[in-house]
Image (tube, rainbow, N blue to C red; front, side, top):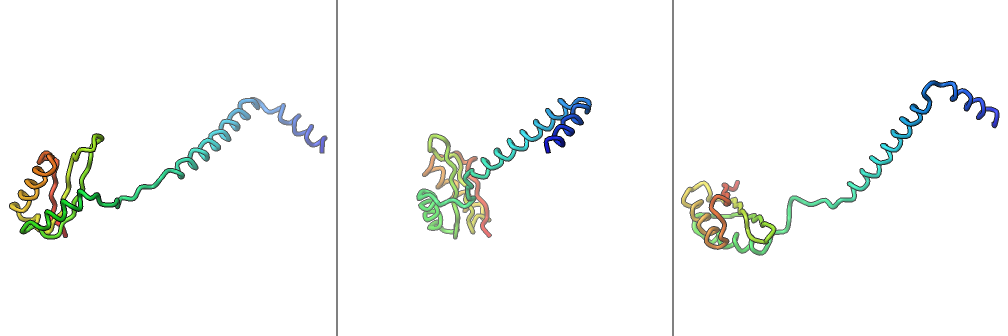
Length: 126
């Protein structure tokens, strides 16, 4: 066994640029280990669902809008800034095909939430 190892070591010494080949192999192995560790870290990250629980403010706004003539069934989503203030509102409502209904919805949201009308989007619900 020792003789075989000596023969192998002698053969390696005759290969030109063996240091560079071994260095390249070590770099490849280190890179594979790094990528494997990095990939396992990423898989431990929390996965957020697109469907998030509805806030009480969204539920209250939905109930109010559905009580307005012409709005019908609706869904509301509110986005908040870092200061906790509402920055944008999206509403899908059955009656949103009627421009008067859209204007009512925008007026209600602007009044209640102090959100600029340009940050409110209204879409017709299927």
